[in-house]
Image 1 (tube, rainbow, N blue to C red):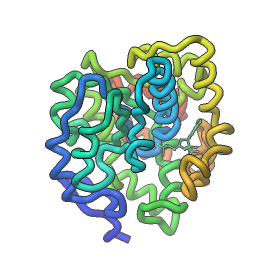
Image 2: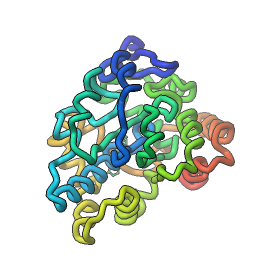
Image 3: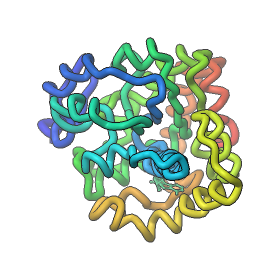
Image 4: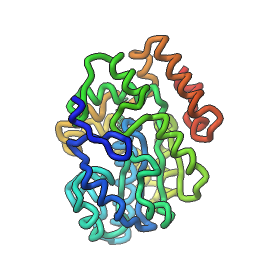
Length: 288
Ligand code: A3P
């Protein structure tokens, strides 16, 4: 299954959706200061928060009488920065503001102009045990990624960083270097799960999207797990079933054995103990 992946700057990516040619073109991508960017490690809830963002932006655009600016609708392709072909950035140039962009890239692989233009980035975090659990099921479902014979085999790959888009702990560690950037706000999967209305409001304020209470409530209602799962065939086709799997917190308890549990705790200590992003993960609450 190794040939499903290729390597770029030491990190592997699925050849089915990314390409080395596109990565070369990526450096020339020009961010706008009003682009709306969602960053997160795979399986952190990107599609969930992505829908919330898209809903907020399109509702605002409608109010303002603007054209639609959903990358997905306009170009009929994935709104991920690193997914597509080398000409994607040329097509993106023609899109009206505000463009919505998702990415799983680590900050040092993100085009310079995003940081230079102080483009706002919402950084989505999810506890590593549930991320690994979700990633395992996704890899073994209908996905463009290599599959695994057993959970143990997957766990070893996850813990040694042999994953598409790289090692979870490197990802958080690298983003932690940007935690004090004024243009970055974090949100966790778990806080959004606990209070979706508050999360939606927080996201709208961060991107300076002004909606009425009623409109905000609409965004909240449309982003429940149930609603998104029911709508998933329309939004994600055959991927719907694997993308909207369980949508909860602590499913890792069904997969991790005690040794794996301790190994993950040790990695957390080693990489993230004492860091700001480590604290935001609320590891002690969600991973014990
Ligand atoms: P599980 O596999 O634990 O169910 P991503 O979009 O980054 O690939 O993340 C996928 C994870 O987000 C899946 O986790 C999926 O169920 C969860 N998810 C998607 N929509 C959700 C929603 N509306 N509410 C809660 N979780 C959601």
